[in-house]
Image (cartoon, rainbow, N blue to C red; front, top):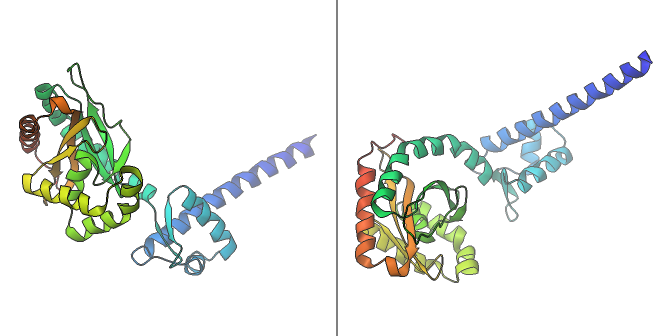
Amino acid sequence: MASKELGKKAKESQKRQGGAQSIRRTIAILRSVSRFNQNGARLSRIAKDVDLPPPTVHRILMVLLEEDFLSFDPTTKLYNLGMELYSLGAATQQLSVRNRYRIALERICEQTNDVIHLVVRSGYDGVCIDRVTGNARVQVLGFDIGEHRLLGIGAAGQALLAFLPEKQREDILKANSPRYLKYYGIGTDEVRKWLKNTREKRYANSIQIVSPESIGVGVPVFNKKNEVIAAISMANIGGRMTPERCQMIAEIMLSEIAAIDPPSD
């Protein structure tokens, strides 16, 4: 009996050690890809860097790809860090932005009675990190908290993308081009026109793009380095969103954002 118990405990210990070893290998591979992330890394280079057999590294890489922790270019055979890692890394910053601008959302909501969203960039998308609901009888809920939407689409997506550096903006437009066409039937030239208009007016006006009934307004939020870090947006049915009201809402948003000390980065 004692012998069986010892054998059982030994097997359980081996399982725990095996699980810990797998986790350590995964972490080592992530660190390796991170070191080579600027130019990307092939399987052989990662395997050599972590001192593991290529088949073992390949199995772990496949899981990390499935979970979006890594990305892979089939043409160059290079691995890079994936969007999920960037999302996790941005979580702390998102919480700080959410806490800082919550009062602005509430004040804008009080003055407009509409649903107000706070959206930040997540890779090639915008993700809603906060929402305040108004008292108007007719409201468009738009984003759910945690919901993603393509950068360049909708008022928040346009406000976020329009004020990025040109090269970064063009890289995102190129990456999102197939999805613009697939989901919205539009090309990047059309999106570029919206972004140019957004920069000129200092706010985005999304007219019947996300849905045929809605019109949205979005404004950028900048840090002290004048880098866009978020967008505040709202939408409602077209009948309530005259050009005059859109401009009024944009001015309210800009005023409330300006009343808050921006983050350093």
